[in-house]
Image (cartoon, rainbow, N blue to C red):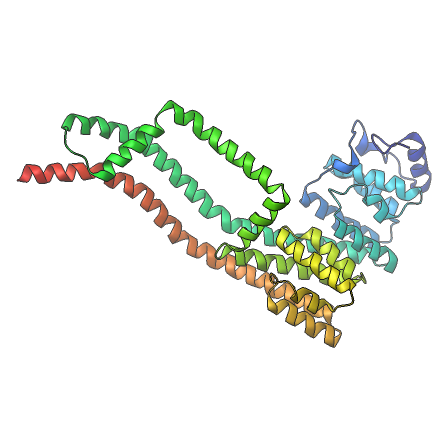
Length: 385
């Protein structure tokens, strides 16, 4: 049977008989999606996971619970996904197998945890834990983005103000300087030259094209294996921000691995899930190298220590956890430690960035203003003589 479009009559009849819930296909009316390309907002997915966890704890059957949730969803794409999953469950399919049809919504780590929850009979707890894991990961990403947005916005503002001065103010001073016929300082001559370039029609055409070409080339280069490795390695070497990214990656990796270990998933499979949870290719390559060593019979801490990227604190604490049989406990504590480190460093960076950004803006604007008034100072000195 095709896997696209609305639910077939046969599937709907099965759902009606087993769930005894009317109008279960209502959210799907007039909607057609391709399962493998379906995406939903993270916020809607988190709400769904929390609600499903509560529904399961209340004793409602899984298929019926999914159908009831779908009827009350405002996100039609997610309602479509949940409704089709409900029908498949009624036909005898497992939840984890059904959700694999939506790889852009339910990531491999989520599928692995759901499989463990189904096997252990703790699906409600696992769903709640997945929501918490996603929330923590989004929180860390939000903190890093927040630390980057402020200086970027202020820098863009400084560039806009500088361009405004060069386009609208400097040309008027140029006319005045031409009438004076005096020799101009080097800084003033340079600024007038920059202004003539910025106000030319060629600049209005070439600048957007250059930016567009630069972004296109960067995206194309970053999509290659060589570019991905080079740029991600360069990102980790950026002062202050590189260390912040490593700490955020460690917090995410330890949190993910701890959750998987607690669910009874083997270390190798858990590490494999951590690869998809990482956003940096250098970290992913380090985890892949560790997986190959673990498969050869090496301990987890030794396998992770063979990479030069991961902090020594991580491997040392994991070694203690392995030797004491408290690996999950150590991973949880490492995750909490790095989350606090990220919060603290983001706060410090934000406070340090404010005067630094103001200083940069002052240099850009101040240089333009000073270059315009230097000839006047020279003229006043000549007149006083």
